[in-house]
Image 1 (cartoon, rainbow, N blue to C red):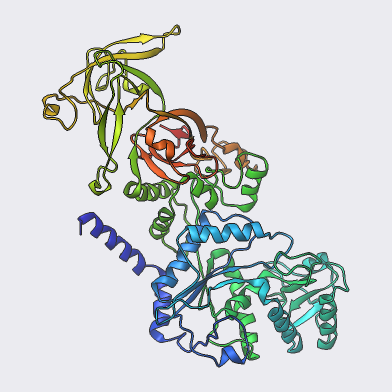
Image 2: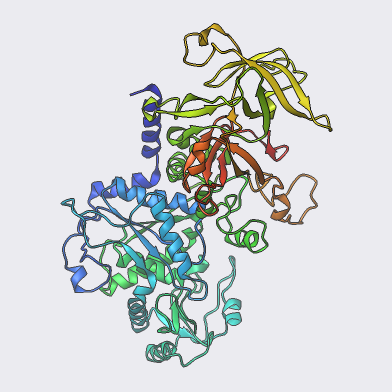
Length: 615
């Protein structure tokens, strides 16, 4: 094992040992806290589950997105955390769609979320203790629990823990109180259980319009935590649902549905971000009441909060992302500049890069701002290992070898990966006229410049040493061609190759064989680390518009020349374009024989916060 590999393994072990969520799980496993849980093979309450066989999973976690949009980078961290913990501790991670709001959810989002989780390399199915595939797939929908949720709500009414409130939304809001003042009891708070039950059943039957009544938990209107001041648990919604159609006229509130979903699925550790910490007391109150009634088994799920992902140079607010898409600042939800997972995939960010990034940033209870360069470094590290090397000339200048026979052609061998000889070599055609990068020639060289200029020699990488003899200019004085002579005995790999000591080493392509392609040079979508944040000199109390911080150079489209082998690149194939960075064949716009390439990330971090662009 190399020293680098050893240090990486030590780093990973150190991160794992200091992860407070892992510490909680390991303590629970050591104490046998969840060892007596029953599992009938599917979620649900009742005698079969409460007296069924032991749960084969040591722990159960879940990733519970609401299917009302596309997943972003923050979701990737949560996916890697929840699925990773389940893998590491002999458990299962459930993919559950929290589809309790019929007005915002669509099947399109369900499909995209399933695709994203699978792309990141995770599965919600799990082996049995015997190692064989089992029937439970652990793909669930909250809407499939609506019958049980209604049953539980009716139990809360009968047991005096819930009532139907007939106040308007404004009246409820006014009586809720403040952080320093207690709320006021609803005039319907002492409604008899029989009357509340009758109203709730009629709400289910569609007798009332939206907003006419609402079912509330009866807890404490003077509680210091406002979330315990008789929170709403069911509201009337006359809307079609993507999964249940028009069956329901009432829908549960998320804060009511979520803990029930966790309990029905035997979730042991319900991991969420810090904004849900204030909801934990209601989470625990609700599950305790239902367990007291024999409707749920113990031990109950434990909610654990960690800080959400905050990255420089991006926005993760759903509202702001929608603005960017709807106002056409980007080309859609899969625009490679957008911090969505569909955008990241199209840009060429590898799934393994997200897993590495999630491991490196870890989890904590403290909010912090992570440098975007850490994400880019994770992507580079993965791509450096996996991506084959190719040559692309992005800013072409013609190089003419005057003493090379016209019409002749030969091949030079180049490694597919300089650090992995097992990946083999490829043949690159060589001829009299070549494309080189414009920056590889200077008519009047600056100090320390070692590439081509009149009288200087340089090596054509994997080819010959050439000496610059002259250059041509167009009518505008721009260099249009460079002339040189090649040294016939200097070919790389030949006996004479070591006879010539030169400092410059140039990339090149044969003009006759290179293929043209559209190349999109993507960069950071925003030009400042904190889009919309107040700057020095801004007036007090004036909120800046985050859209004012968009980077005008976040995408540049050019025509480039590529190695002929790249003409047949398949969508989502990734390569390192030597000297330029990592590129991927666009998964949407690439056609057979005509790939379009997106720059994934440069070879090194050259971003300048001062200028808002690459140096």
